[in-house]
Image (cartoon, rainbow over all chains, first blue to last red; front, side, top):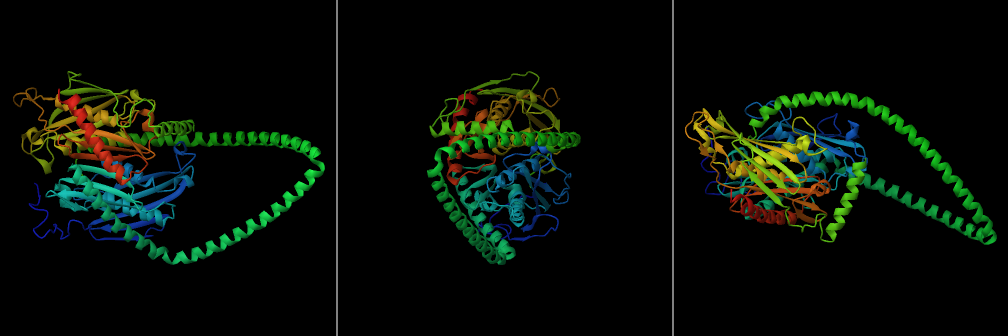
Length: 349
Length: 260
C-alpha cells in the first residue's frame, strides 16, 4: 500500500510541491485570535493548521509543583482526532507526550520565568490539520502566542525541520518527504542562534548533519522575519507611545532620586555636626536602640511566619486531597490508552 | 524546598569543579564510567542483557510474538520499545504508567534501533500482510545512578544481538537468530555553563543545563538525536557533541559489543 513517489526532486531541482531544496512552505500567521486566552496565534504552514494559546502567568495548581524561585512552563501539544487521515484516538499518547516535553524545553531558555515565582505559564498548541512538521509549526505559533500574551522573553523561538530525500538535504519536509524520506531533523533556534530543540530520526552522516543545521538556520531566519512583521503589525504603533511614557517615567524617577540625594546630603551634614558635638553619647544610645529594634523585628517575623504557615498548611491539605483523587483518575485513564499507544510508535506526522 | 536548596549547592559545587577541569568522581570531561555488560541473563526471554554503567543498572529483555503487521508496512516486523522507571531504582520514581521522562527515553532508544535499520525487519515477516514477528524490547531500570539513557541504549542492542527467534515454539520452522545489521549506540553529553561533558552521573544529571543524546552507527552516521533539558546549545557545542558522541560510540562498540 506504499504510495512512495519514485523521485522526490526532478531534473530541474524542484520538489514534488514545486519548491527548491532551501525553500520553506508558505506560512501565514495571525495573533490575538482567541478572546479568552492571554495570547494566541493561528498559523498555517503549507497544509498545516495550528492554533496556539497562552494562559498566564497564573497561580500553579497543584501547589506541590510550584517552584519558589521561578515560574514553570506547561506545554501541551495536542492533535485533533480529525487532523490526520486515519482518525487518532483523542487525548495524550506517547508521541504527543514526548513532543510536549521537548517543546516545553525549547521555550525554557528564552522565557524569563524567574519573574513569576510560584506561577505557571500554560501553552496549549492544537494541531487542527496535520501535514508534516506539526511540532515545528506548533512551536512557531506558540512563540507568537507568548509574545502576544506579553510574557517577557529574551527573544523569539523559531523551528524548522530539515530532511533528506534522494540523498539530498531539503528544508521543511512536506508529507511525502516526511513519510518516505531518509531523515527528519527538527531544530528550534533562538534569535541569538542558540539551539533549544533538536531531534532526529533517520540516517545522516556527520557532514550532512552539519549542513542540515545551517539549512535549518536559514529556514528559521525567514520565520523570524515573518514573526517580527506580524508582531509589528499589532504592536508596532504602540512602540512610540510606550517609549514616550517610559521616557516620562524615567525623567520623573531621575528627578525623584536627585531630590532624594540632596536630602540625604543634608542629613549627612547634620549628622556629622552632631557627632562631633556629642559623639560618645550618641554611640551608646544608638547601640541600645539597635538592640531593641532587632529584638522586636525578630519577634514580629516569627509571629507572622507561624500564622502564614498554619494558613498555608490548611490550604494544602484541602487541595492535596482533591488533587490526589484527580491524579489517580488520570493514571487510570492513561493506563488504558497505554497499550494502544505503544503499537503506533513509528507513526510520525 | 530543601531539594531546591540542595540542587543549588550541588550545582555550584559541580560548576566550580568544572572550572578547575575536574568532575566529582575524578573523570575527565570525555571519560565514560566503567561499563559491565552481561548477556543472556534471563532464560525465559528470547534475548536479554544486564548493563552496569557506573552505578546505574539496567536490565533489558526481548520477547517475540507473532502478530499482524501495520497496513503501511505489510512485509515488515514490528518493534515495540518500552522503558519503565521502576520504583525500586530510585526514591524519586513512582509506580504507575510511564511518565514523560520514561516515554522520552524509550522513544529515543526505539528511534535509534528502528532508523539505523539495526534489525532487518523484512526478515521478520512470516506471511505478508498477515503474520509477522513483533519484537518487544522492554527496558527495566533497576538502579538510577545517572544516564539511564545510554545504559538502556547499550542494553537494548546487546539484548537484540543475543536474541533467537522462537520459530519452532510458534510452529514456523527452525529457530533463527535475530537478523542484526548494525549496532546503534546512544551517547549522552551534557552542559554545565559552556562546558560539554559525557556520561552524566546522578548528581551531574540533576543539575546540568542540557542533555543531548546522539545515536550513531558503525559507519559513523547518525540515526537518532534528542536534546533534553531546560537549557540551550550553541551551534559549536552541537557539532562538537556529535563528534565526541560518534567517537565514544565507536569505543563502546569495539570494547563491549563486538565480542557478543
